Image (tube, rainbow, N blue to C red; front, side):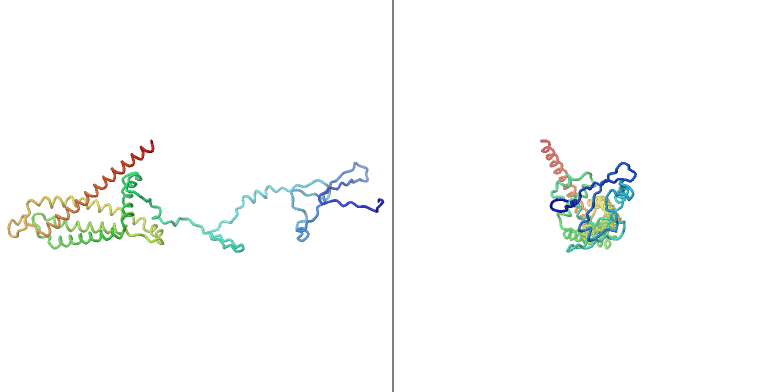
Amino acid sequence: MGAFGEMRHTPSPGTQKLRVDMSSSGSTPVSKVETPILPSSSMSQHPPNNPFPRGSQSYNSSGSTPLRVNTSNRSSANSQRPLLPPQDRPVRFQTNGHLQPSVYMPTTHSQADSSESRRKHDKLSDVYSQSGDTVEFAKNLSDYINEKIPYQISIAVLSCFSLLAFLLIIFGLLNAPFCAIQPMIPIWLIVEGVLFIISATFRIYFLIPTPRRTAYRRQQRQLGASLLCKGLEILFALANIVWLILGCVWVYGSKAFVHFNEGMFERHYCDPTIYWSAFFACTAFLIFYCVIIFLVICLLIVGSVKESSSQDQNLD
């Protein structure tokens, strides 16, 4: 009460109110601190189902001792729980506004094209400098030639040589009995033609490009077949070299004694078509192999010189 009437004090939100409780037994007064919790606008509109406010402590009805709620086990259990359950099906996320849904498919293999991962060689000397051993050098040289020369030209050249090899087979079959000085010359023509056609077929097979949509499928299905074809190609290449050496012995060894006149010295007679076909075939193959060996030696020399010069520049 005052001069202007009765005045009341309303505590502001969050202020503490001190109440002294006097017991009837005359014991020491117990002071309790009460903190009024005022409902907010969101809480008034949506009252919670839980009568106790969310927090780390609450008060019991009988006393003023706070009760602590242990939330450590709950947080540790939630931290160990996976965000998404394990499943084999694709995980789909719902659209949010104008965003498109994202679909994540589980994959166990890479579908990258293996032909894109090949090492590119800009210069011929890089073939030597980027090779660790003889096998890698041969592979890098083959890749370099395939990169620089279009596969259509290589296939056309191999097809023409295969046609010439087929003609050698025809000459050997038709004139097999007409070379008395060396009966192995017609047989050499037949076998050499067959070996060359088989080797050219393997080479054409590896030159044909693989479509991108079937590159991975072909790689999975024909990995063993490719290794087998590579091994057979190397085997037939070695057979060609050995058979060429034998042919040179038979053809060049008979040149000093052969004659082409029928009825005279039958033991030294040979059909001119058979003999000269074998002679020019041996000479052409020898020139071809000599050119290849010469180019490889030049490549090794140039590559070693450039590599040594680059090392000297790095040291300087």
